[in-house]
Amino acid sequence: MAGRDTTESQAIGSRIREARIKNGMSQAELAVKSSISLPHISDIELGKSNMMLPSFIRIAEALQVSADSLLRPNVPGVTSLYESEFSELLNDCTPSQMDSILKIVRELKQTMCKKGEE
Image 1 (cartoon, rainbow, N blue to C red):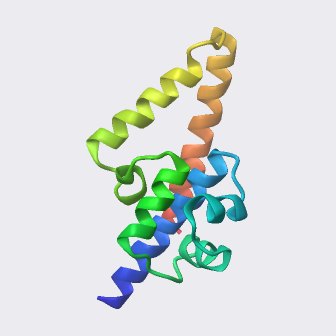
Image 2: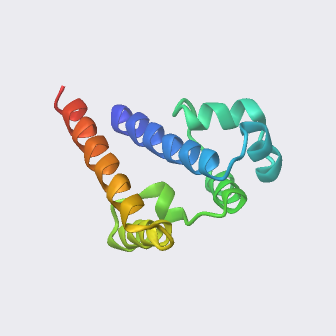
């Protein structure tokens, strides 16, 4: 059971890190906004530390993200959020830009799938 807890903590920490970077926020900024020490933020992102619910809520609020996106990104509601975000990103692209983005995404997906097989 401890191994599963560590894996889940690492996955959640990784998603917190991704959301923080996406928001252009440093660990120090997240620490201040969530009233959590910088070393603890680092440990959370690395999956070295489990966090209490109040800390998780403060982090989600500081990042302005849903708890679902940090806990379970494969939930259908969260998946539709990703689809919506992709749609928004492509909304003002030219057909040529969309084609280039599609090629990049395909290549990235292939690379990620190959790494998953190793």
